[in-house]
Length: 427
Ligand code: PMP
Image 1 (cartoon, rainbow, N blue to C red):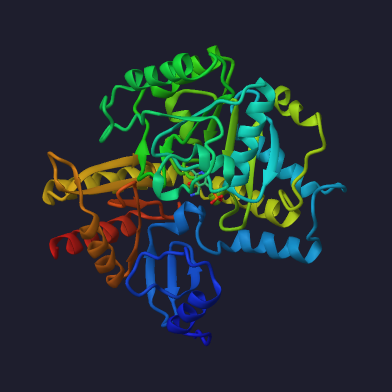
Image 2: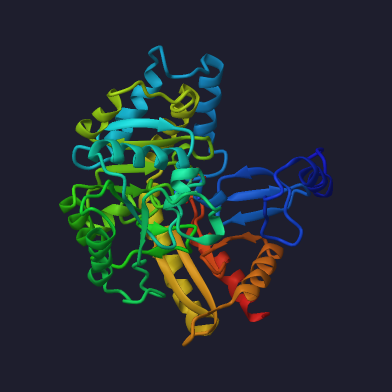
């Protein structure tokens, strides 16, 4: 049994010693002391089904034994920076990662986070093209350092930073966007930004395939192929931010962009790739990567052997436990059940997403799509009481984000939907 400090004590210390900007979802935030596959346990030993996985940060299950073993084994052997000596773990993981990428995307830079990966990707695009302008999507989230905060386009997550050449295009959001599901119409906005907002030449375009923080928005079909074409015509590079939507989670594909039939010039990733260990990566082509030889470039902890050992173990587990297939089968099953729930509860305005990256948007009026901001908090609270943890997001904070560990089962899905059903009925 847990013998550490209780939630109240931790809250008190948090208020005194930690960032005042930290937030939590529940009236009484949970003190989570243990994790095991798709379950989390609080200080009283109460078990919760985890349908959020720390914002998709855990991909093969909390404390997966094989990943733990890889981390502890490597920690005993060597913890080190990767900068000046050789070590095979980093090259083995780079090779394994490259084998999961299409085309000439074979050169890997390691970082410690998604923010760092996107900062590096945007810098590479700017160096390679000699241009500064970057186009990103409204409602996107790309990180919280100066450059990535500029690319992020939700006021909730932005301070008064210098935008630094980022233009924000119309979001190809099939539910709330101005052109519905017509991807090509939204793509024309990018052409107009290039024509009327830049010199006609741009550094690049960055987007998620499924917006995570933005509330599980899957980009309208036809959008990415059209935009990639315009960006390349303007000399720019296309960056896919796969921090949330990548690594087997989409089920139908390993990467989110693959569902749109495009091949990016740069792919960034983090979160799930280390199953909870800080690890991020940028993958690009040899030709593009060569721009970083103009100066020395390194990242002290990026790709250190402990993190890359975790990454290698994650790839092994994904393969052996067929977790991409599981994301596909269980994700379809869960989405189907959620669609049925939508027929029953008029507050569910939309059910969307792919694989085990699903969204349920709550609205008080289906016609007006009025965000059900307070209602969602009630439902979340009730679900927690019944032993289910789920995330939320979207600009209005009214979208359930369902991003469980990829070992989630059909039985878990049934339990999840039944609990959501009961909580919605209580509203
Ligand atoms: N890109 C996306 C799509 C993300 O969701 C996030 C984090 N929510 C980031 C980048 C930034 O990653 P990190 O928090 O690891 O810096």
